Length: 421
Image (tube, rainbow, N blue to C red; front, side, top):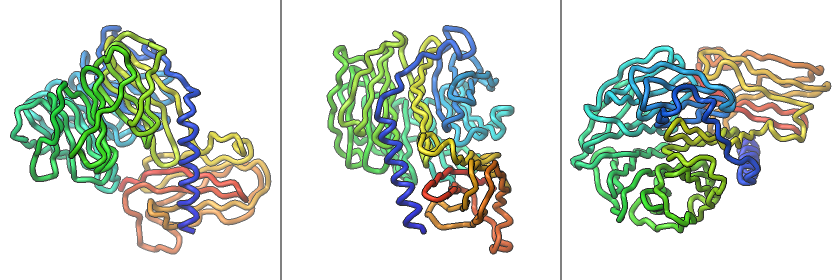
């Protein structure tokens, strides 16, 4: 069963990749939907999932949140203007203020808890994806970084005087990459080292594992490493005027880099080649870009920048978006999510069918079978408790990501949920 589960998951992800690369959804300008003054500088963005996105402002003490495909936005007050932000879930996130302070929310921004100060401007924040042990880093001016763990901020001096402007912390790794001025730096948990120096100012770095990474910078500079930053190979830039590149972000092989004067370029082969977007939706500088992706669900891409500029690449697709049997059967997203200790799983069937509904951990181990019987047509709601599992008396689940799978004949659908103890 475990092998079948992961084979199915792999097929679904490959199918999604094919849909993502079709480029049938162009960028759209949604700047007028963002609240606030037209001169507002949007400093950072994160697409948490296919539903929830956050955008920060370094001009005013506000964060903007959208709950549905960036169609409408609401304003959240913050302690200060924001230089960077990161949300692990729709309700749990961090903001870095222009006041050099780090804040945390666990209630969707209704309140902000002070975690500590870097003593100087914070420029970026990044988290690994280990849900069992959330660990993050911030970087700032004068060669400082901060470690976020157990709601504590520990400030570390690198020994370099550079202003670190971007940080990348890949999944399940202790290695942290940073860029500042014209160089790439590595922090291995103990010491800092300068790995590489280019001939231009570097503005962003992104590693998706311990070997593969990209850097971008001024004058259209793009380079890729496949050996953990030891060597960097410059890649061809199709932009005829080599505008400055300010950020880069990928999900799997698919991603974007954005830059001055509204520049957007796309890659579908993990940064080997780049395609110039000629739509030119704005002439404003773009500072940050982000895409949501993971599990069996993908969200849109968002790019933000100067003069309240916000662009969306609405590539939202998921397993349930396939037209094959979506009208016949449907597995809905659990609610609440994240949950503690229980959540509701619901599904719809249009005809009498034999239904199986199972829960798995991230390794593909079956946790519990919730439904295994014939069902009449209709919508069903099943309560799942992480602390009261059939056949596992007194044994509660650990915090983390879990998958629930609906199987009806040849139809199979999978969604992910997050349990927080």
